[in-house]
Image (tube, rainbow, N blue to C red; front, top):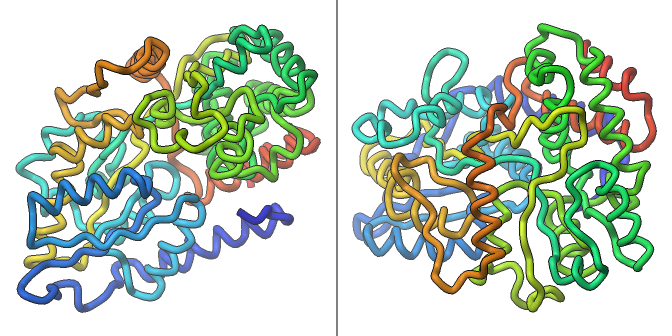
Length: 434
């Protein structure tokens, strides 16, 4: 992904995209009830998930159960690129039949093009975890998307083989985090490969970090305008964020490194970094069935996942929430609407849900469903999955911000990038008060 040179340009561009998409709420293609040849139904599905590797298995399983339905899947690996393309599709009145959506500050905007869940899933939405459904409910009380996966922050993948080679132990305190990072650099490796070019990752990390100051929860109050962004606890958290860069915990030029593919592929999977900060969904890299690790420099190494060490004065645990949901275009009717409903059910509470969560791309939303691991998985892989599962189950703080502007996540991410590059934390946070 090309590095963004102008922070201001990025912020303005996002705002324009949202405004334009809002202006066309409800618009869409007039030919949504068309079917393919021979009476078969074809559905367009655009998202950043599932991954291309996982999608092949999911679509094969679904189409085997529904031979008269074809899913035309288009994927963008980068979430920001996906949102830009989705904006453009909406502006062109070509809203996909089914599209991925994430909870957070922009949820209501994209939900404006979605069919209410009650119109196609009223008979089975009760099989989805109620708290997850609450997160895909708009400010007006309309459930606009079906939750598919839950996820949390902040974790990191680590190369145990490399840790052992360097005589390092997993850090449990901030001082140990700095010490391990310096030792890795002295040995010629990058420390924790952070994709800080992604505003979503910066924002997610800061939400997790900020809850470690005061009594926790100030970041959510600031998002709703209840307290200023430059309040004491948030400034303290922003200073701690800045130290992660100045103390060398994150690699040099982290703000020009994307999470995917750069931090993951060019650093961690290339064997150049000891660790890779990421979300709970990436614990699948520790499994023997991971499609990412084979063929990389670390394919013979032991890979595990750990919780990022507490940085502030209190351990607030992991943040969690719906990471991925599916929305059905409000323009669908007839056979296409019925087919879309079947697909969403397959992914939310059917075989697709079980198949996908088994890959550890996310954690189940279906009531009573749990991850099933193969008997041949290593103790390290099992321990990593147990750690993440326990962390998410005990989570007390949401991962995403709601309230405020639709562009809040991006705006906060830009501010955090500026702070990482040396700007004054208090002044940068204060800019969010406007």
